[in-house]
Length: 352
Image (cartoon, rainbow, N blue to C red; front, top):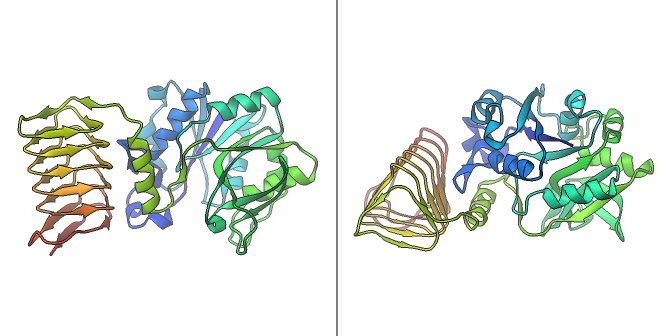
């Protein structure tokens, strides 16, 4: 079995963060979203991986390399434009043809991984298998109608309620999906829809198996989704203190502190990850905070936030529910009140 991981989407719902970086490389719980997907692929025992790239392809290539970090062999596949999931499959036909493949949307977080899903597919060998989750608002997702355990209808982003069962961004296919994709024309939103391809499989008598997700899943399409996924994945981290923490600092809960980081006269509340090479002083950090490498936090309080590499936060009395892009400088003037920020790379913010 091979895996096809999609890393070419533009991330329009995550702007301004995605004006200057690939959405799949936004860090949550201490590593890029895409890396969590590759962890899951490797855990399932798959070693041959195709990564579909878009306009941020150079950045993804630089981050992933040859895949040896995960003991994977990576093939990069260029998609001419973001024309839909089924278009990405068609673009990758030469890579996937000849054996079953796992299709994984690289901006999805699946806490349980995909090992169980893959093993069930291998045991029963349907033509396709889809993962589903109950969601309160399915209007922005592909949804599925079941009769018993049988898939009968799929609709992409329905304008009216069809079902509360949403497609999770993880699928398993054999070569019949290539035949299905070949029948498609662009939808009303100009994309080749994977839901239409799976509907073709259903309509032509192919076996499409549906399985429910066990545990947490999130499509990280918006800032609030990033923060929710960050909270969940932080809970899976094991405590590790590789930096230097002085005697005046209080640590509680599960805390990770990277090598070369110094913490002085502060309070660290887990779950919390502080990357390498940071300087923290006179501050309260956590819970539910991920701080990437090379950041400085002075006389500030941060909770429920993602702070990307190279940021400086000084004199901010209450930063919460925030996502700071790379090399952002945030300073507070009078120390009153609290703030929620979503700020793109290389920004400077003074709030009072």
